[in-house]
Length: 84
Image 1 (cartoon, one colour):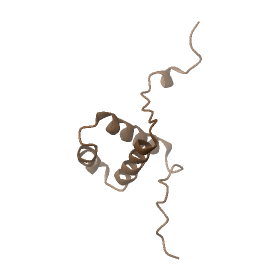
Image 2 (image 1 turned 60 degrees about the vertical axis):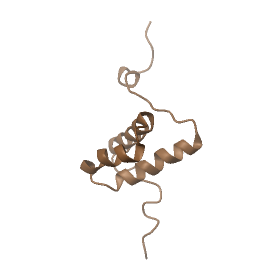
Image 3 (image 1 turned 90 degrees about the vertical axis):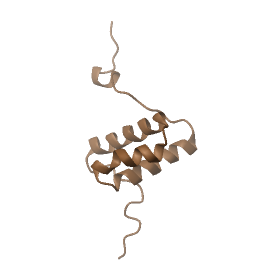
Image 4 (image 1 turned 180 degrees about the vertical axis):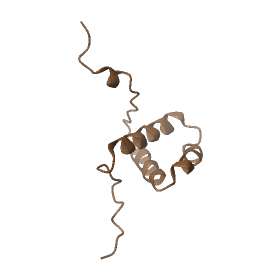
């Protein structure tokens, strides 16, 4: 008897972040990366994550989720600075 979890979800790598400070760091880095051209992101993440492979994997996972979602997942606060 197999699991009820679809095969595609079973094989996905999930990077859970349990520390609220680390969660904020992941979100901040993701927001910054989204402002960059896709080609600039690897160099940015290399420098920003300073060899912390788990941090980088978490940010990359979140970036992928945002990209996979299309336009409905927008970075929080991205439009806060617009003037009327």
